[in-house]
Image (cartoon, rainbow, N blue to C red):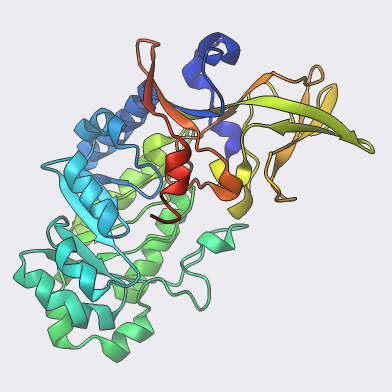
Length: 401
């Protein structure tokens, strides 16, 4: 993932060794760092206080609701990608805003969605035509996702909503061809989401494109949602420029500005502890088999792809000995990466991956019958509290009666 060298993924350990802090835990397990979550929330709350914008938790990145009370005082509410996340946000951050965007809503779920979401964003004029009036009759604030056709990403095409042929959002050509005055009248706001782990300079570039394509529409709107992908809590992020972008939109178009970061809410606030099960060698390659899995427990390692930070380890060949870290599964490509160490790994060694609160517990799976890692909270007082332990039934219940 971008800017990994500036993330400080192990800052929450305050100089302590992983074995000292987490050595008593069964592995594999996730550990959620409450103090780091609170720190992130306070940074986001500062942006909201300085500008008057509203910031939402994008639950697609972090949805461990037991920790929502840590973030809730700092946020305006939650953002959802569908019915279940909307319900989760309504139930676990009660009394706060619930926004939802989905590329397409189904008829059988939409009426239930109206019970939970206060802001509903549609992806296309067709979906707006189909469901917009129903949402307005239910007293909901209605929005349309736009596509400013401004790509600012490099290397992560799978996450680029502005790529040619993208299904995400309404382009200006689609707007001109399909948005009747009656449909425009249904709208309270516009939504764009174009970023992924990016700084505010890319937001500023995108905002100019939004103005070029939809500047005539924006004065008619009540709100504008800047979407997610803002790495606001990463050390070195240009918060001043972000705040300038927010104020520009507020002053130019008279809108309430929303942001819905996911990673920024839980950046550097989680760990994945694992142990070495076996050590082998194939030719010149040293291999360590772990009790965790990229495919099952940190899917973004293969999907994005990226090399997750590992405590005390260096790049391949940087330190004395290099190991390829892989999993128990049958997938040949279930490899986390090549890392170097000061000394050879051995069976039973504890390893700690960082920045594992995001896109892990909400995306993991039981491929090959791999057990799901337990989830622990690491409190501000330094205590470890079990949140959830998984068993065979969690694997089996997804597959049948």
